[in-house]
Length: 319
Image (cartoon, rainbow, N blue to C red; front, side, top):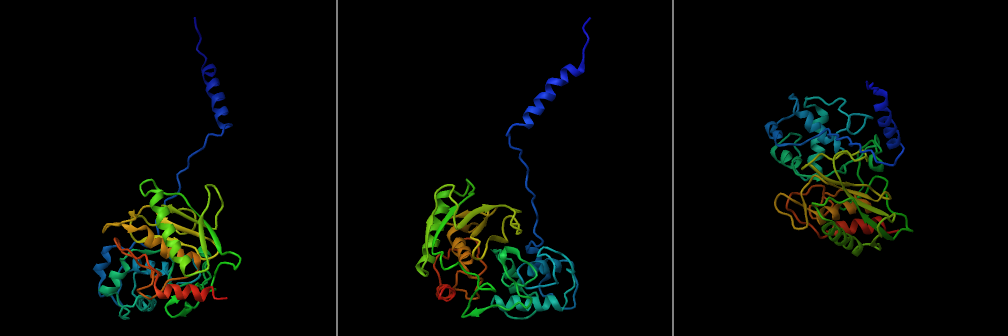
């Protein structure tokens, strides 16, 4: 009579498991998909005409948006904190809206009027327009009083961060790039944008060899990608970049990208020209002819530097 011993069957399986643990087989871990604390959407049109003294939970979304881009400060908390954000249209919200309207050349009403809502709904760069010192996100220095260093319309980061005088010949790399976008399209767009900036500076730019450590690193990322500024999916924030001397510029991989954009796509070169301006030291401009304005609509192509952009770069690296 045969006797079945379960331990005899399990022993080889257990040994195989131990062997697998000692090999170099990679373990795949799915990254977190953090949802940003603001998500501008067409429902904001339901609050058109809102003004101080009113209360509506939907106004929290407006406050989150203004907080994210530097117009609303509720104390020493993380940029993504919801602390003190309520649906009350208070003095802080009114003041923040006025500052937002002034920066974007709108009528300064302090109300959530139609033009302000329309502006909020336009996709934009993820770099804040105004900085405070309560956070070190993106290596920015942020003064508590949100003053901006204006010369003409161009703007510098608060401490005029710029590349060291010894760095004039930059190398750059492009990775990762989604297959649906295409590395050749991105390479051509980035090279063309860099030629524009090279023409108004003493800089030169050369793509590095594969695997080489480079001064500038350009890539496509989705949602939370480890730099403290999660992307938000299609629409809203299109890209963001870091000031000198970080060198990183990220596209949102969830957007529809093209080198010849249709009305529902975004232009690779237009966004590269803007974000590389941040990488070299320029902040957002109020000049509508500048490539450093923070907003860009779908299908829009803006591949030429404005006078304000060139003047800002000349001033930043004058000495």
